[in-house]
Length: 369
Ligand code: NAD
Ligand code: DAO
Ligand code: ZN
Image (cartoon, rainbow, N blue to C red):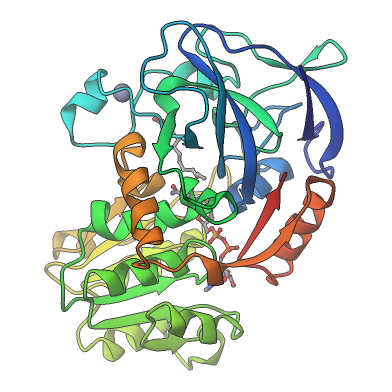
């Protein structure tokens, strides 16, 4: 079938709006009509060419919501008409990783997903006969896409696509990092570095679990007002701090953070996030994706004296199990998504979304089809 898609033809170039060809779903796969997709920092990272694993040409996008329109042979958990969210972290419930219950990093289709193809080793997308790579197994910058059944979360029928698409990455990553990875307790002191599409969701996760003090750190002062709405109790702009930021944060939290989160992708901030944690028990979770080849460092004594360094992908969420629950939280008014979706546009304008992100003017832009 013909499909309208924003294609990343090469690194560093704007996306090109094209009519591409999409094959029918094969065994164990489903065809999804994408109704809305968010544009995340990670799409921009790959498009920029900085992602060493980035493949071109490709159809990017990993934060979508839509409807199942066709199921391939052997598909049992989904049917035509189901509302769904594509998962860049699948959940097969059968692999060693899934069965361990210690991680959400299902490995069932890891190798082929990393090569930009479906589990049978081929792509469903092409442009004038040339193969196009899938991206993160999801490729949501197209009005139709094909996914393996194990990488699709079925959600409730009344969930609005233009809001819950954000649960496909940013919302789940931020809130999940608090609940699943760091396991923040009520009464905690939390420090969040970076108050963008991820960090604001860390704030609302921390508020939801009952953290007492929630410090937000960002160099963009325009983030303060929105961050307060999402639970931040104290704002720190590093540009306005005289002297050492770590010392300032340790003093502010009266001994250090119980939990900190790095939501920028900056290795210097990752170090500061670890070192502003409380001696003996502070846990720092890395969410941001750093540039290719970059490394983190600290003095080992920071760990010897009880601080813990962690990282999280997709907020530690097991997508088919956890994503429908997060959709329920949104529908029940327990979490706020609406105020984070600052721009909505048609696919033809998707390059504007990248521009708004680079200028720090948007939190989330959403393309609706
Ligand atoms: P964003 O651009 O919306 O937000 C980043 C924020 O960091 C901005 O508010 C910016 O002003 C602030 N910032 C930049 N430099 C700073 C500095 N030196 N000190 C303090 N604040 C600073 O990005 P986002 O969409 O929130 O994504 C954040 C990171 O998370 C990215 O690296 C992204 O790739 C990554 N990410 C990780 C996962 C995961 O599963 N681990 C999932 C999605 C995104
Ligand atoms: O190696 O098993 C694995 C999974 C690797 C990919 C995990 C995703 C990491 C988060 C990147 C940002 C997502 C938008
Ligand atoms: Zn698995």
